[in-house]
Image (cartoon, rainbow, N blue to C red):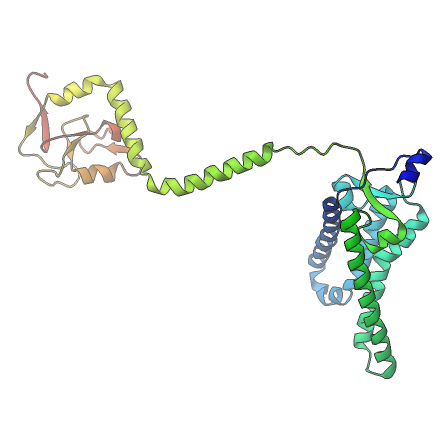
Length: 307
């Protein structure tokens, strides 16, 4: 880095480790998604696709590599996260470097998979056991190299894979954008989740219908003050019946105020349960539940002073 600055050319800032890991994960998810789409599109040929799964993966990886890394110098996941490959003093890796990188990341896994499949299907012999032993050693060597490279990547933040280290291709930021974290959306989400959890805990313990009825009754009394005076001028008749069930006298009688019909408390509650209005059985008027008034007897008639 110091030599680079002394020579006068600019070195891009390396990408964050978490962004490099996320870009690699996005690339794998894209391959898996495309594979599922191909399997669904050619469902009648599922047995053939299962046998040619490494070849399908090779074809998809090659096409994506040509459309992303070769054309723009960045994979699909890197472009989503504002990253790109940087090689030495050039902004984009040369063709020769890309060819070696393609062979290490796309061709070599396919060759390795096909070789393992061939060894698994080959009849057991001295030569086959020898090749299996060599393949096992190569696999252990690859695992050790991958582990060592991952440790070095966590320490330095450069070269996510062994292929990147061999080719000298490291992930850098495409544009120098200040990494400012906005907590507005996060705070809004936390507040909303906290409010929803509080509401889920509290609402089952609140009788909303009762509070709404009390509020509507209070508003109705405030808006129609003359109705209270009219209620005080109502007198009771002894031969009263509930207009809904016919019980005489009604239990806890209530009056709709539109006519002389009265109702049991249970009957009027059932009538107003669904819509909040009572369809009067006497005059067929629709009376809001908030206008219902309790009485002290069944049938109600107005006194002479009220008339």
